[in-house]
Amino acid sequence: MRPPNRLDKTSSESGEDRLIAHYFRPLATHPGAFGLADDCAALSARPGRDLVLKADAIVGGVHFFTDDPADKVAQKALRVNLSDLAAKGARPIGFLLSLALPTPIDHAWLQAFATGLGKDANAFRCPLLGGDTDYTPGPVTISIAMVGTVPAGSMIKRSGARPGQRVCVTGTIGDAALGLRLRRSAASAQRWKLDSAHKHYLLDRYLVPQPRNAASEAVRFYAAAAMDISDGLAGDLEKLCRASGVSARIAVERIPLSEAARRAIASDPALIETALTGGDDYEILCTVEPERFDIFSAVAAEAGVSVTEIGEIEKRAAAVGARFFDRSRKPLVFERTSFSHF
Image (cartoon, rainbow, N blue to C red; front, side, top):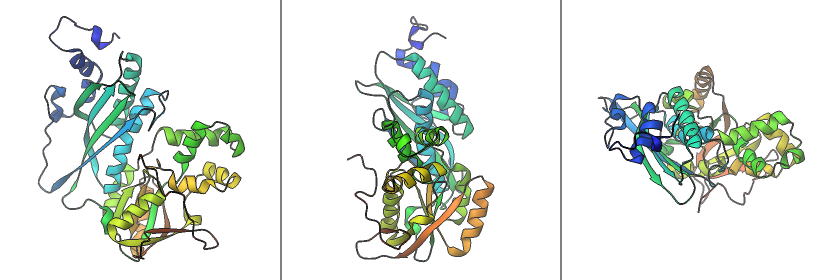
């Protein structure tokens, strides 16, 4: 397959137009995308439905390693946005892609990127609707704006938590943060006494998030407040408490950990802070009324997503949002509660 800037150079299309047509027009399957031939996409917001909008970017050397496989980079870019929609109880309907590339263009990389993006766009039923391509003198930068939908007035916000509700998370916590530590220092696997399978499990959890969109409807029906965990459980729970004007009390021994994470933390107990504050989990954090937890957990399980109760929402304590306690009921104090760019 010839690269697009060598195709039809006598045509009136610019190199950028040819690049878009070659790599991304096949992904724009929604009729409102007009085959990427227009400046905008058009989506009809049906009566009784709200659009849910989200934009997130990932940057080479910051959110992914520059030698990560291009198809996995594409999947990560899409899935971090899908995760936000899952936590809002929304169904994805499409996305816009802005892609900044250095020159000369690596067409093998770009083809793999488009293949990975198309695979997930199909799997999650969210076609490409349009976007933009640009040159950058820096690393590859990918920004995605996701469009989803919910029944009118039903989006689950951060601000719905109330005292007495249970604090819940999907999946397992800390795998990606530990995977990042392994990616930066392969020798950590030996120190943490990890076998090959556990090592690769943690590395894969960092490389490609697993957004819990299968549980989005359960979240919409049963959760009172929710958000996805991108910057670390401790910090994101603090944000949810702040938005709701409440506090939370969390029992650390209840927090679900994978077998790989348990092995690592057993070898180095200080890693519990990495697991709880490191970020990139892309699990759902939510609050649920006590009498609704069992049905919420059952419905999520039917969708293939595990849910664990880890604590309780309390009345707002002065200057305190989320408190974490170990088995001896001693409060944990973190050097920092979450990942931050700045």
